[in-house]
Image (cartoon, rainbow, N blue to C red; front, top):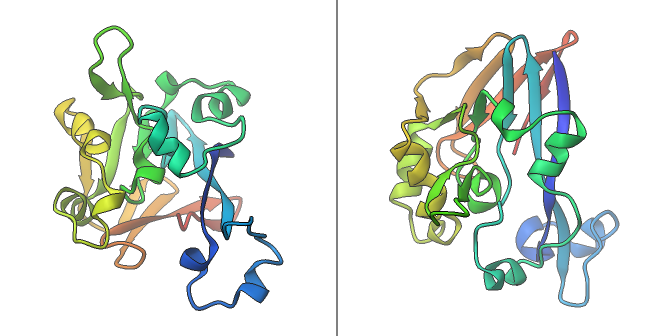
Length: 206
């Protein structure tokens, strides 16, 4: 098994909103804010190469939204999902499975693209199965007021319409050496992978 850190890009969010009750005097030492109190955040995915499986956890924000949307979140840096995959010798067509911890736009926006010729939305990973928990899916399709701004139907429905979406119904082994647990934490039904790697456990907390 091989693990690869996949950086899909950077964006900015308010430091106070992200750290909550933690005082700024503490978090600004490692995450300095700009003049607008915004901190830079990496949108990292994890690529797991195991046997005939190439499993990508999450997929970043993507590039199909309007420029005004990206400007609002101050997207910056040269990293992208495709560039990071290419760095390790892979392409989107090589992905066999895309495990989505949750369906907020910064974790699940990169798996759907707009066809340059037809303008239609379609899965980026044409050979992959997309996985998430049923509870998270239902929460995304019927969001509460607190989360509805983080879910976009254009990031979700195309993978279902293409017949590439499967639900994780139970905790436990999803693939050999790759277990999942489901939590109600950051968002209801969040999927947390537990990966057995070189006699240790790697947890992708998203």
